[in-house]
Every structure is written in C-alpha cells, then in structure tokens.
Length: 92
Image (cartoon, rainbow, N blue to C red; front, side, top):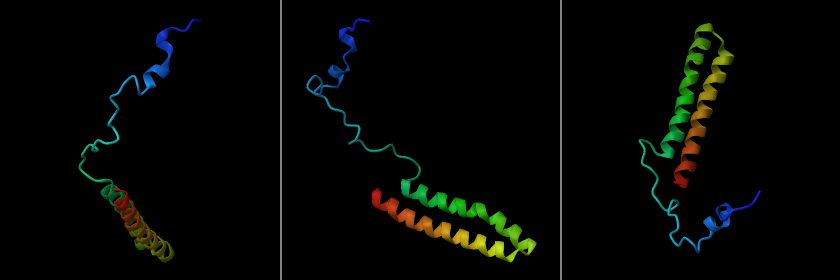
C-alpha cells in the first residue's frame, strides 16, 4: 500500500505549520447550576439520606445493633462529605 502525502500526521501536529495554538485549557469552564464542591457535598448528603429508610426499618424491628451501625454509617458518610468538600474547595 502506497502512502500519500495526506497520511503524514506529523504535519498536522507540527506547531510551526499552524501558529494559532489552542486556548482550550485557558478557557473558562461552562457554567453549570452547581460547582464541583457542591456536587461533592450534595452527593454525600444524598447517600446519607438514602440510608434513612433502613434506619427506620431497624428501629421499628427493634434491631438495636443494626440501628446503631446505620446511624454511625450516616455520621461517617457526612464526616467524609465535609472532608471531601474541603478538598474539592481547595482544588477549585
């Protein structure tokens, strides 16, 4: 198979041939309804809230060890959310 001049990808990647460089990394991000920090914190709160029905079932069933375990799990999820939110805030 013979190579044509169009097959040389090096020409397209040579910065001397195209003096106009991309400014994609310098552009602002597309604004959204929430920031990354808010997404991180919100997801942790959402996951903690998803455990609440299981806490209620354990409470009604009188299963105290499971109830305490789930309450501790919710607390740990929220504490992790606070820490992750602080880390995300530093990265913004």
